[in-house]
Figure 1 (cartoon, helix red, strand yellow):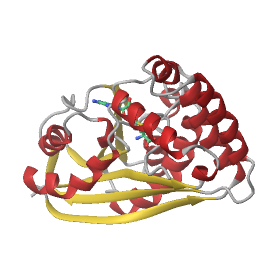
Figure 2 (spheres, protein in one colour):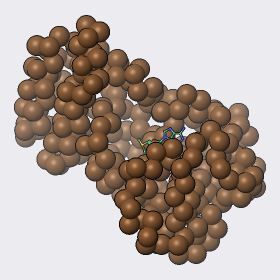
Figure 3 (spheres, protein in one colour):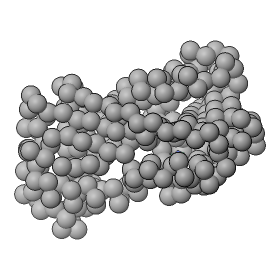
Figure 4 (cartoon, helix red, strand yellow):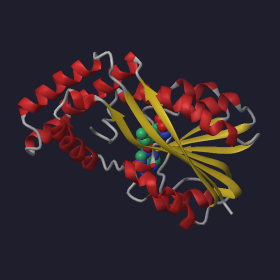
Length: 260
Ligand SMILES: C[S@@+](CC[C@H](N)C(=O)[O-])C[C@H]1O[C@@H](n2cnc3c(N)ncnc32)[C@H](O)[C@@H]1O
C-alpha cells in the first residue's frame, strides 16, 4: 500500500482549496494576532490568506507564491488588507523584523532546502513573531486492493523524484527549527480522513491524471511502466473510486514556533 502523497495535477486544486480552508483555519485561527502582518508563504490559490483577510479586518495579509496564476482574480479586487505578491520563498521580498506570523502549508516538501526558507522566515519575523507549518507526510488508502502495488510504488517513487516532492522532510522540521534559533517549538499530528464519494473520486482522478500525463509518458519511455500496465492501473483506479469501502487518509504534521 502506498504511503506517499499522490499526484498534484490541476484536479487536485479543488481538494487543496477545501482542505486548506477547513484544516488551515482550525490550525491558524488560534495563532492569529488581533492586528499586524501575517504572511502566507507558498499560498497556492490564496484561499486561506483570503479567509484571514475577510475575518481579521485589522490584519494585513501578504500572500506570496512564485506562481500566482492559481489565484482567483476577484481576490485582487475585493479587499485592501490582502496583498498578493509573486516571490520566492528563498528570498522573501519583505524587510527584516516586519512580520507577526508566517504560515506555510504544504510547501516544505517541494523545497530543495527547507533550512534556508526557515532562516528567511526568521529574518522577516519580529521578535516573538510566530511561525506555523503544516505538511502532510503520507496518504493511506486501500487502492492496493485494486492496483498492482509494486508497479504503483515504482511509478510514485519516480514521480516524487521528478517533482522534487519529499514528504519525509516534514519529520525533520522540529530539529531544523531548533537549529535556526526558533524557541517554543511544538508539534502535533492531524489526520484528514475521508470516505466521502466526491473526495475519493477526486483522489482517483488526480492519480489517474498522473498516469495519463507527461509523467506517465515519461515513465513509459523510461521503462518504469509498460503501456499495458498503465492502462490496467487507470481502469483499476476507476474501479477503486466506485468501491463502496474505498477510503483515503492523509496524515499531517503541524509545527508552531517563535522567534526568540
Ligand atoms: C502544494 S501547494 C500548497 C498551496 C497552499 N499553501 C495550500 O495549502 O493549498 C505548494 C505551493 O508552493 C509554491 N512554491 C513552491 N516552491 C516555492 C518557492 N520556492 N517560493 C514560493 N512558492 C513556492 C507552489 O507554487 C505552490 O503554489
